[in-house]
Length: 206
Ligand code: FES
Image 1 (cartoon, rainbow, N blue to C red):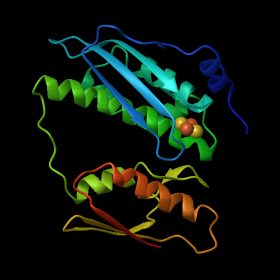
Image 2 (cartoon, protein in one colour; image 1 turned 120 degrees about the vertical axis):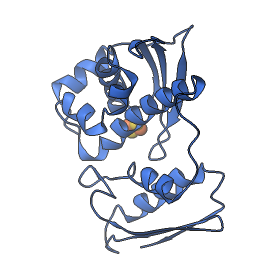
Image 3 (cartoon, rainbow, N blue to C red; image 1 turned 90 degrees about the horizontal axis):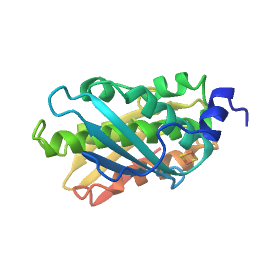
Image 4 (tube, rainbow, N blue to C red; image 1 turned 90 degrees about the vertical axis):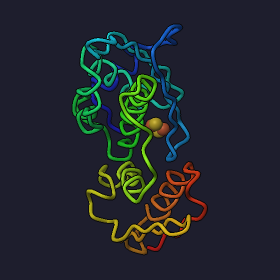
């Protein structure tokens, strides 16, 4: 697998790495695709909402460490509103690219940063807890990467239908029978949705 020099640099010498003892908010997220984990800690200025300090701990692959490193560089000094808009594509681009099968690693880093920001906003009553809806399912499906091209299945228009009835999530995905990533995509959708207590059953048709 070909990694850019930037990925290698951030992997060998990650920035902002370590546990923060005193912090304003934090989040730990795991990737359903591989089981790896990242924790992000934030120190935020209560008046300006600027992220003054940020640290991460990673229990994962080289891309996981490199994307967590670059994402903390990108977020430091920005307001939480700005940092929330950092995308996984931006993180991958800042690393001069990632192999398509490794794009989910950048999704994990960005997702963890967003969750840490959400934790801060909830604690400071800047937002209210979101109500579960079909949009919640859609947002999760945007995190499922089709490994062949390194793009999410919603952007690729592979998701044909999303339904939610009486606790059952119904997802229809357009993916050829002979596609070697078919099972991975199905499994990842399932793992992304299983964490919601509102979902008691998942029906995926392909
Ligand atoms: Fe697990 Fe990269 S393979 S985050």
